[in-house]
Length: 627
Ligand SMILES: Nc1ncnc2c1ncn2[C@@H]1O[C@H](COP(=O)(O)OP(=O)(O)OP(=O)(O)O)[C@@H](O)[C@H]1O
Image 1: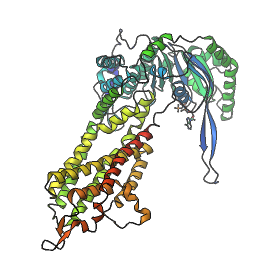
Image 2: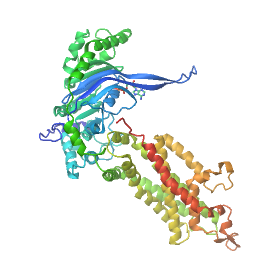
Image 3: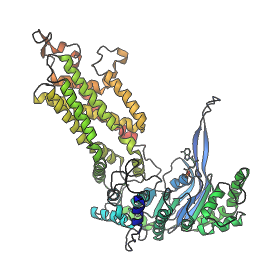
Image 4: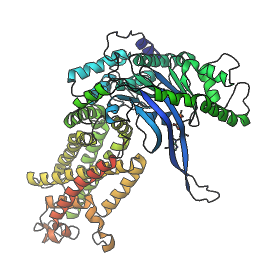
C-alpha cells in the first residue's frame, strides 16, 4: 500500500520544461540493421538412459533480421519468450560477441567506443547497490560517466536534474534496497536505471523490458518518458512483453519476432492492416499486442489447433519475406546516413576511451565502496566475533608459562590458522557478489578494471588490518608473551602478513570461480591442506608431499610467529620450574623453523603480489564485450 502511495505521489510531479536532459540529442543516430544472423554452439546434453555421447550443435537464434530506426523514433520489439528479442537488442547495443552475421551500422559506421559513449543500455535486471540512496546512486554514476569537461558541481547538478525529470524527488533519499532489504518500489528502481543511462544524454538508448513487472500506469509513465526522449531526436529501441494498447500506439515502429524469424517490421499504426492483407484479421476488437503475440505463437484467429501452429508461423515468415523484406532492404539503402562530422570532431576533443582519469575513477569508486559497505565493514557481528575469539584465547592461554613451549607454539599456530581462514572467507565473496555490477559497468565503459580493482582491494584494507591488530593486542598481553615492544611488533607484522596473503588467496579464488558455493568449497580444501602442512601437526612429512609446506601461507607465517618470540639460543626449563636448562633450538616441534627465514619472507611477498595478480587476470574476462 505504501509502495503504491509513493508511486502515485511521484507521478504527480510535473516535468520541468527547461531541462537540459530532455533537450535535443547531441549526436542523433540512424540505426540500420540488415540481415542480422546470430548462431551459437550448444552442447546437446547426452541422454543418461541411452548413454549417448555429448554432441555440439549449432543453433540459429536470429535468422536474418533487418530494420531501420531513425532519430526521434521508438522501436518496440515484441515476440514470445525465447523468440530472440534480448539477443537482438544486445547485438544492436554492440554488446554481443560470437558469430554475429549481417550488417549493423550507426550513422553508417560500425559500433565504436565513440558510439558506446553515446549509447545507453538499460538491462532487464536493475543492477544497483542496495545500500546507496537514489541520489548517491545517480551522483556516483554521474561522477564516473560524465567527462572531465563537466565540473564536479555540474555533474551533481545533472544527477539532480535527472531525479527531478524522472519524478524521483520524493524518494531521492531512500535506499535502493534489494531482495532482503526494503527500498524503493520496482517502478522507481526502473526509473533510476533509466536515469543512470540518461545522465550521459545518450542519443541511442536500448532498454530490455523496461516495463516488466510494473502496473500499467507505471509502465505508461516510463514509456511516456521514453517517448519524450525520442521526441528530442533520440533513437530508442526496447523489448517489451505484452504492452497495453495504450502503450502500443506510442511506438513508432514495431518488430515482431517468432523463433528468431521476423514476422513484421514497420509502423506500429499499420501492423493490423498488414496482417489483414495477408489473411490474418482479428475476429473481434482486441489489443494489437495480444493479437501479434498470438500470431507469433502460431495462433491465428478462429484457428488454434496445435497441428496448424507450425504452418501458421511458416506462412507468416513467408509473407514477411514476400511483402516486407525487400521493401525494407531498399529503404535501408535509400535512407542516407546522418553526417558524423561534428560528432567525430567533438569526440576528438574527448581523447581516449574513458570519460575520467584513472585517479578520479579510483577515488569515486573508493568513496562509493565505503558508503555501500559501511554496514558490512563496521558490522557489530564481525567485530564481536573477533573480540570473543581474542578474549577466549587470551583466557585459555592466560599468562602462559614460558617454559611450556608446546602450549605457546599452540597459541602461535592458532593465531596463524584463525587469521588465514577468517580473511580468506571474507575476501572470497568479494568478486562473485560484485560480478553483475562489474559486468554492467564495464560493458558501458565506466571505468578501467585496474581502478576498480585497486579501489576494491584497498578500500576495506584499513578495517581489515585494524581487527587483527586489536586481536593481537588483546591476546598477546593476556597470554603473557614476551613483554617487549620489538617482540610484539614482530608478532603483529607476521599476523598482518598472513591476513594480506590469505585475503589475496580469497580474492583470486573468488575471481577465478565466480561462484560463491564452489569458491568456498575450494577455499576450505586449499586452506585445510595449508593448515595440515603448516608445520605444527606433522614435522616428518614424506618427500613426495613435502612440497606443500612451501606453498602454505600458514607454514611461512607460523615460522615468523615462532621467530618473533624465540631465538634458537634461548633456553627454557625442560623438566618443570626446577628442571635443567634446555635450548629452544633443540625443541623437536620447532627446531626446523630457525632456518630459511629469508625464504619464507620471500615466499610471502611473492604470494602477496601473485595471488592479487591472478585475481586481476581472472577479472579481465568479466564485462568483455564486442567493441
Ligand atoms: N548463450 C546461449 N546459450 C544457449 N541458448 C541461448 C543463448 N543465448 C540465447 N539462447 C537462446 O536463444 C533464444 C532467444 O533468447 P532471448 O533471450 O533473446 O529471448 P527473448 O525473446 O528475449 O526471451 P524473453 O522474453 O524470455 O527474455 C532462447 O531460446 C535462448 O534459450
